[in-house]
Amino acid sequence: MNLALLAKHGWRVATEEASLLYKLLKGRYFRRSSFLNAKLGATSSIGWRSLLEGRKVLSKGIRWRVRDGKSINIWMEAWLPRTNYFKVRGARGHGPRLVSQLTKNGT
Image 1 (tube, rainbow, N blue to C red):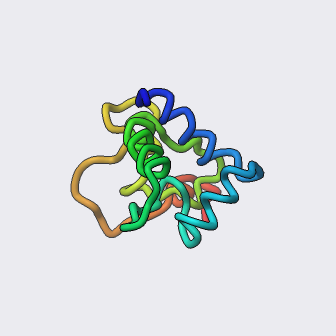
Image 2 (image 1 turned 60 degrees about the horizontal axis):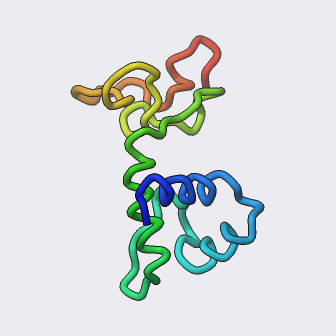
């Protein structure tokens, strides 16, 4: 299958948690994580392997929409609006770890 189509299906799995497909894949392949963090198992089907190939394409352009920022790690997540990598680059400091901690009202 074409990678763009696989990425589109991957996006549906990542965002439509009420769908039957999501529930089936969640129960079989990523019970304790999310689709975006799921691992390839030794007995994975060709369909699951294909979705993970599409996820590679998807992950190159996906980034967080910052709302309260309480679940976005400054250093590990893609959240910046205008950079080549959408991530903070450079040495990690001892300061804030979450985006919410960068704001005046953050926790």
